[in-house]
Length: 353
Ligand SMILES: NC(=O)c1ccc[n+]([C@@H]2O[C@H](COP(=O)([O-])OP(=O)(O)OC[C@H]3O[C@@H](n4cnc5c(N)ncnc54)[C@H](O)[C@@H]3O)[C@@H](O)[C@H]2O)c1
Image 1: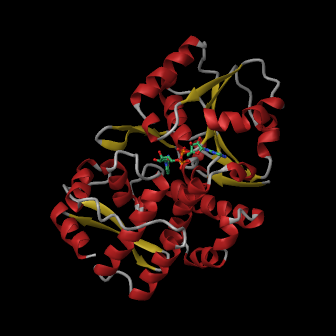
Image 2: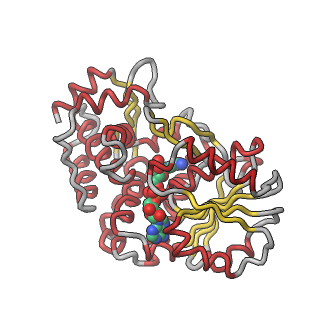
Image 3: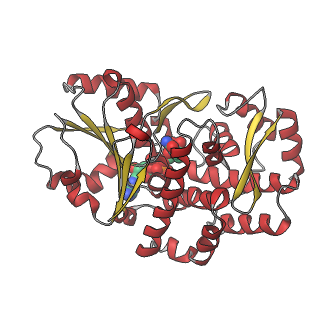
């Protein structure tokens, strides 16, 4: 097992990465009066029993959350909080989030507001949640007009990544996770981008050693960025490469067409071309980014969607500043720069691609 650290003073916590971690997980957990395992039906069916087998605690409750992006709503949060009150969950209880980013985001948010905050840990089971959403303490749900519009920065007590759980992940979810993996290469580590190019086939085959290395590198990059800028006032913004377009695509298609990762893959493809059009990167580097994204097999053509609708959906983007839309665009190998564009400028640029 490898252990990394997110250094945030009194809120610091470990990230444990290893195979078969779930089997012994209860042995690593601190004491709590009771535990609430938040998960969804699929993950519960696959891993609920493995987790419970070695757990001797007398008070472990399970709350099954609805699945899919639609579940990330205040309606779900209210139902979960009510259920916790019914179960008699106190401030000395803890939450264990077992699942993908949707479970993690909802469980983390519930932990942050229930009785003004109780501890929680993240046990991510999708590639996307293992390399990204479980680390950094961003929790929240969507409003109809904005993705992740309600939420909090609320750090977990620990992150436990069992790489064995990836074996049951559907191919589509694996590809979605690769979006955030590729993102780290573009925003922060050009050598890692090269590593991904070389080992792309191994990644698709879930080759264990390669997978663990990739998860570790991604978590190291994320931990470093979060430690530097927990509340996204500066450098943490670079994690949003591909996300301005990505979130807009999710909103315009009502979260039904693309998974989050697929939308980010398309977003990174479009935003790399925007950077090229603005002459921030050369043709060769742009091609390198695009080729890697295309190797996931994602269809990047979104011609059926109106550019006007996409831009309009950015109106409520949390990252907007001074009435302008914020894009994180590649500006050098392993580096990005924030570019602020008016809706009109963004529209003209997208029409040129
Ligand atoms: N908080 C953050 O910093 C952050 C960062 C990135 C993304 N996100 C959020 O994460 C969400 C996307 O997360 P996701 O991609 O993990 O999707 P997800 O949570 O919707 O999970 C995808 C599907 O995979 C299933 N699943 C999970 N683990 C499995 C396993 N091991 N085997 C088989 N099936 C499994 C789930 O039941 C679900 O149906 C989005 O809402 C996004 O906004 C948050």
